[in-house]
Image (cartoon, rainbow, N blue to C red; front, side, top):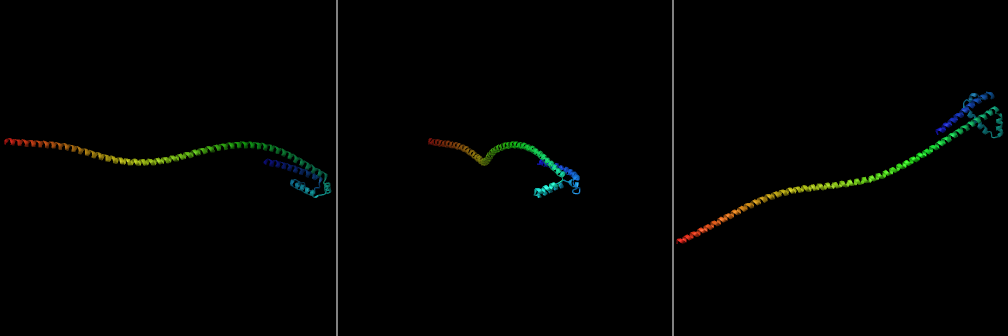
Length: 248
């Protein structure tokens, strides 16, 4: 778009230069052919009055409906003036056609460049599309891999939760066992104390038994001594009786 505006501005400036040059030439001719009192040459230095005059001429000609009126008007125009205007229009049209051809050539070049840019962009879009598809495949693969890792992570978390629950249960069982062991230790201490007391009683009972045995032995010995004493006493009594009988 900037190139088109540049070419259009260049063409307009060239046309403006042509109009200004033609206006100066026309001013010189009008000095030699036309009445000086009608129009001052300085008024043609600016192209815009010339354009207004041309528009006024077009409007005036459009208002002349009959060809006879136009022919009568043309007959009143001086020949050099009509020839100059014809030559000026011919040169202007030639310049316009030349610039149109140049603009058309520039347009073809730009069109060819734009076609090349279009093909390059299409190729870039195709490459980018392939890259996007490849990236999409990678993203989908990563999503699948991520889902797999998420499943593994969930399973690991569940196993960890079960392990924590199991450890909690084991800790509870451990505490219960420790409590039971403590109770058993207390019972064992009590039983050991009771056993020591029983052993002490047993020892005392055995000592009493030994004393009883000794006492029994002593009783038996005393019983034997008493029997011997009684036997001796009886023997003495018998002997005394026999002695008494022998005396009589």
